[in-house]
Amino acid sequence: MRTTVAPVTEGPAQETGGCAGVASPSFETVIGLEVHVELATVSKMFCRCSARFGGEPNAQVCPVCAALPGALPVPNRRAVEYAIKIGLALHCRIGDRTRFDRKNYFYPDLPKAYQISQFDRPLAQDGYLQVGGKRVRIRRVHMEEDAGKLLHAEAGGGSMVDLNRAGVPLVEIVTEPDLSSPEEARLFLQQLRTVLAYLDVSDLRLEEGSMRCDANLSLRPAGHSALGIRSEVKNLNSFRAVERALGFEEKRQERILAGGGRVVQETRHWNDPEGKTLSLRSKEEANDYRYFPEPDLLPLVVPPEWVEKVRAELPESPDERLARLRDEDGLSAYAAEFIVAAPEMAGFYDRCRTVYPHPKTIANWLMGEVSRLLNAGSGALTQGSVEPDGLAELLTLVDRGVLNGATAKTVLEEMFHSGERAAAIVTRKGLGQISDEDKLEAAVGEVLSANPRAVADYRGGKTGALGFLVGQVMKLTKGRGNPETVNRLLRGKLEGGD
Image (cartoon, rainbow, N blue to C red; front, side):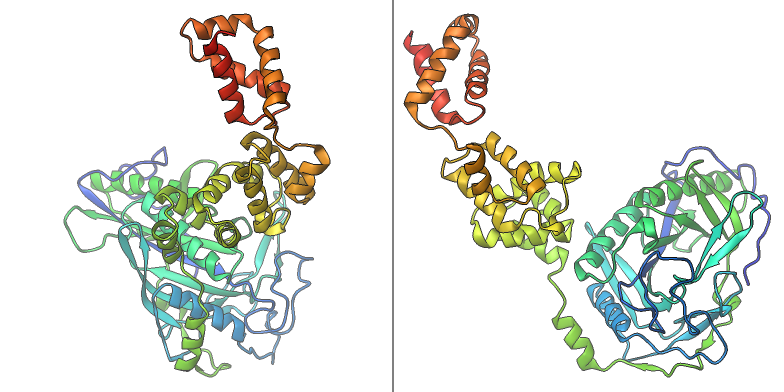
């Protein structure tokens, strides 16, 4: 039962300022995470209502998700398949016979006064996720339905409930208490999000709540194996919030224990603007929810051939792709990690690689100019304004000497805004590189005549003046001069005494 309690006295220092910090050498930090992920199915977990985010409040509701008498649930096969995918990607054992249970609690956003979840027979368990050099064990991956959402009016205006989200399919991913710092918890969540993004089973929008995390943290004396008393922290809406909240909670518990106090097992709310956790309620245990098998649903039998079919359809994992980009394409660890971090970037790279056989050049452009334009809001790789073969065409024009690097950046920006191909832009705007030595020699002569001081500086040993002169020639040629030819002609004139 959810019982709201007043803050309890925990010892000499119940609240502390600040949010960052590491437990003192006297204590070890132990963290376990519970991650909820909404599945990107068309319909809800147990009915045919739309699972789309948003919409008019209570417009995506039927007798099943509104819990009207006599309405019976029917499991969503696609949701089960997505959950199997997640379990396999996390190296879990998929149970051949699982079942749904009722998790009983009373709250205004839960129309049935219970949530259909899984208790002692989860779909998947005993897996792991590799985070850097550490293997974090996954205790279980189980399916359940989401609750509705309370909408709170201004002060004194009461609250309303929107049941559009009620019944949306979820998986809950529960780790063992294997994480040992707030930073490690953040890195785990980032790695988990990358793995799930490759599976394409959720949109993973933290700001919309389609990926949510509750974190359990406790401290224990250094060198001890027994777990300390934990606090569960909720309202963590970003990876940064997870790290900040756990940093605060780590220091709060440390001060309590160091002062001879006792940490109370409870649920705490992260207040992001104030940078601290606040007591919310006493921590529930499994028996508080009075779990029992869902009588309206038969046990779910998962045939081995279904599991193997899903396994065969799994995409290349982030770790596998990372190894391929390093070992086969020769990318640096940094470049490979940058590309693999986002599935759309990795997919773009692979498709470009099939038509342009210079992986390091592709990687450099993706990390540099392409990322700059994306960060500036010039669309997205998935929107198709620049296709992989379009970038390959642009890079080929640079290789052939039609464009220099500076002009190619201008062309790429135009491609992002217009969707036009590189060759068409070059032709329409007359942006082809000038390699004709007679034209460039004339431009060089004009620049040297106009900048006698820079000429004297160079001849007096200030070699940096050459860069200025090259820039002036490029300016005169509107960035179209062949840089190598310009450099050679300038050196010849300057060192030849003309």
